[in-house]
Image 1 (cartoon, rainbow, N blue to C red):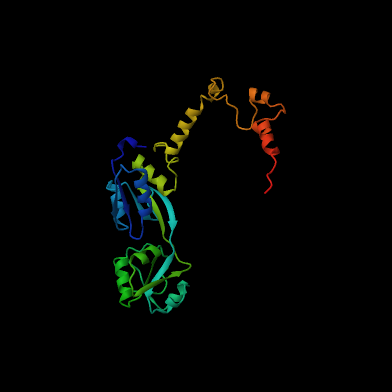
Image 2 (cartoon, rainbow, N blue to C red):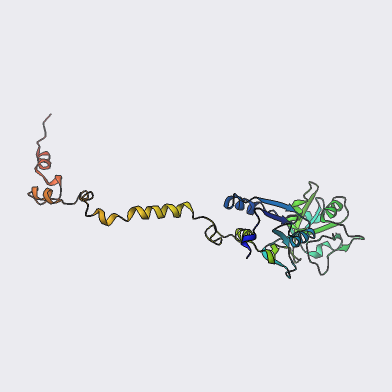
Amino acid sequence: MTGSDASPSFRLAYVPGVTPSKWVRIWHERLPDVPLSLVPASPDEIYELLRAGDVDAGFVRLPVDQDDLSAIPLYTETTVVVVPKDHIVAAVEQISPGDLDDDIVLHPLDDALDWEKLPGRPALERPATTADAVELVAAGIGVVLVPQSLARLHHRKDLTYRTVTDTPESRVALAWPEDRTTDLVEDFIGIVRGRTVNSTRGRAPAPAADQQKSKSGAKSTPRKGDAGGGARRKPAAGKSGGRTAGKNPRGGGGAKGGPKGGAKRGKPRRNG
């Protein structure tokens, strides 16, 4: 751990399709004095940023070369096919790879899916990026299979997407340089893993509720001494006190047993 070398700010990179807003919001709530800056990066660029120390951590897509990077898998995405709205597969909720046998399936160079064999018919050239592939789909030149988050990212009114079963899936992970696991990196790991404030390595101050509980406990400690101090000798309502019980000839515990109470009950009613 190199907590003493932790930077005064936290730099977080993320690849296209990943939405880190939920974790960023929690960071600002727990560590309001530590600025967090977001750095968008391509799937290849993000590893260069991590290894050069230009960012502290990053959301990447697996697999990760773990010789010098640590990674925590977070979630797996559904694979979908992006097609024109008038495409035949738009009429159903999901398809299998075989349903694309007659389609040209584009294979961008930055493809996030690890294919053994791409379904459909191959295109003459591979688009440079997923964004380029989506543009070709809109132009009526083939279809493209991508993680669902990328289909949402490149959404167009003239396109839609459908789930494809039995295909490779993309897994998103948090990665950081193994030799730079700082205190701030540990804090962010706790956030993405869903740890509470109390379980995040004990670095956060005690919650206000615990402090109040401690104060309440301190005020209640003199109770033993109060019993002998006279201030709390007054008996509770409904219980007999020494002299009060002695004045009641019937042995009752309170004023209801006295003569005054009896007189009221014996008062005759006046006739109309």
